Image (cartoon, rainbow, N blue to C red; front, side, top):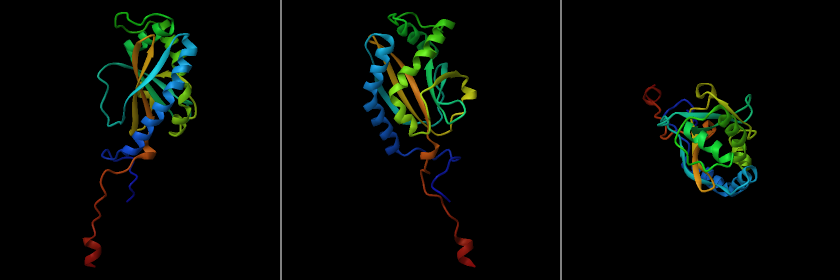
Length: 193
């Protein structure tokens, strides 16, 4: 039996891989902040929060999902709360992002979709390490996203004009998965013959 086990729910992504992703994201966050600043015309930065091996817990609120990468190739996901999409759109349009919590209007939705790519512009190296070949973003229903069951999820706070909106980056990580314990091999039948 191999240590690589994609179907085993007790298998996980090794901590050193998760720590490496966090380090890469922290190093590239200033570059991404500059990309967002150039798009929105005011100071923006990214702050990297928790980076974890995802274990299947659902989000506590309704999320909007965006596919990252080519629709035909391997893809990752970006999850933003529905109120976060509205807040990001307001920030991208020059507003203060401090309005009431609400779902995005159609115009805000399209603005968020067009501008979210700037958040990932500097993360090409990290995405490529997980087989995602571009920072192309498109909205998608979570059921159609078809993410791998093993993921690395990173919470990234996008701050524009002092207002932060958390987004969650989901990277496909099945190729990094190892079994958490060595398999037990039954040898008694072999040894008694």
